[in-house]
Image 1 (cartoon, rainbow, N blue to C red):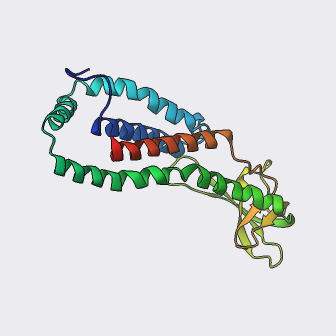
Image 2: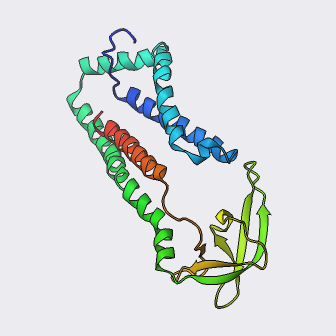
Image 3: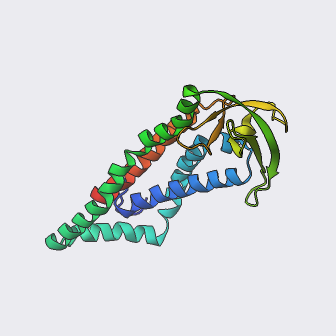
Length: 226
């Protein structure tokens, strides 16, 4: 560690480390999405674990950089040359910016869980109807090597062709002319779900929500009070 460093991160040092973690985890998941299917795409929590592990060697490296040492020097200088009025204004601005981030982060988990369960509740409420598959087409994804399978069905009631949400997850994949069980969203008839798909939220989604909540909460509190 740099000379005078007490082993703890302060202010912008902690913010930089949090930004590094989010950036690495985000880039890893983006790469896994572009090259899906792969083990990182199937288990996004591994991206967070890898990013967390890389924070340790990253800090070891940056502690040898002059700009990191200057952050520590500035922190010591600010503490020695405190200006009461200016410090109160800056502290107020940091609270105005950081506190909404911290409070807003507390909504990530409940909102995410509620949104993820919407499809599950919709299928459970029914009614389940039978619909004929009118097209099964591969849609090329220019941003990845994984092409999307688009399944369309004749919507029960009026026969309008609509995309079947979850159709690509049916096993076996339906063919044109097959009949599949579907549920039509009563509030949005253009949204039709495959009733034969498991719409339960995967276990890792809850862990990912907790990690994101804690990260954003930590970032907000660091900006506000760090």
